[in-house]
Image (cartoon, rainbow, N blue to C red; front, side, top):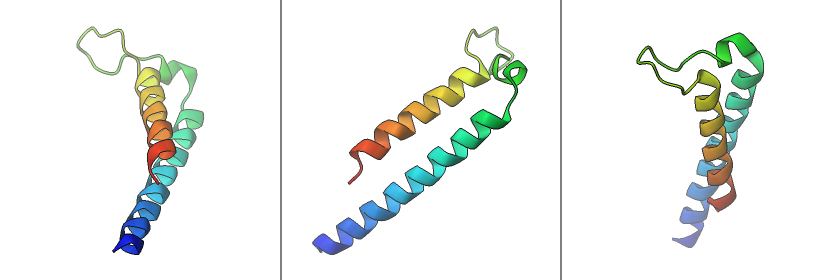
Length: 67
């Protein structure tokens, strides 16, 4: 049973790493103009870039704690 848990963890870690690399690619691909746009049309101060940074930070933290 322990080996099954380890296998699931490895799979999850790989998924997190893959998602993180995808987010890095998206972050690099978008222009500053796009990243500085508001994330929605509800007069928010949060930008698309802020959202991308938040997702990246969350994925980096997850990558550190997932076995």
